[in-house]
Image 1 (cartoon, one colour):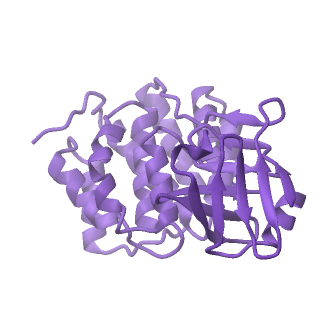
Image 2 (cartoon, helix red, strand yellow):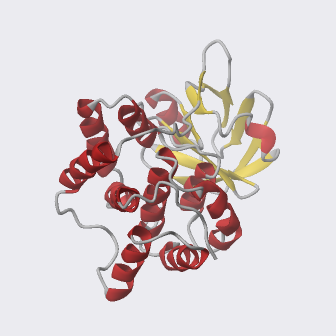
Length: 286
């Protein structure tokens, strides 16, 4: 049996057995894999720089050994302090020890910012994007979506139109439309400018069948105000108003995936434009 120590884990997925007792190996990649239990993904990675909002980190050596022994579809059981993966070649057990494992709360921290500071942050994010292409076509419909996200007060009708258009649009593990929506929502939540978490909870059943399981997991964890470690570090840098850390965290985010990071930052920039039009007291209207 492979015995593997969990190094760090998002508090969103702990305890691991809260979603159910049995699941399957969902997908396997070069440096990470996903388990699925009752439609909830749990991400296991060897990256020291990236922990998803629904993730577990193990060592690179342990991940390499684990990856060699498992296949998609194989059985997984979730116990109180461990996860057992029944690989065809070997059974692997991931152990959680309180004295050796870091439980990480990557929860969004709300921030008070002046409008001048919002302007400055807009500039920094725009420079970071530096004409990088997002994963969505710049057609009249998408231009109208951008206008709805940045002009006037957000209404239920606008939000419905935006979510309907963006969810599932684009290619990849996390479609570009989802990444953009997530970036926009994170911006509104960080600056506490709109009750976006409560509003998007009404769409959880809508996006479940319309996007990928990975993207759904990111959106679902956001509904608990949990984000990936690069976004969390970006949030922290903004909170501390540390320009160097802000620029460094932007660099990390924009390198995520093929266009995922850029899509996220484009959405975040749109949220800053919405806030900049002085709708700090924005509310849902009919």
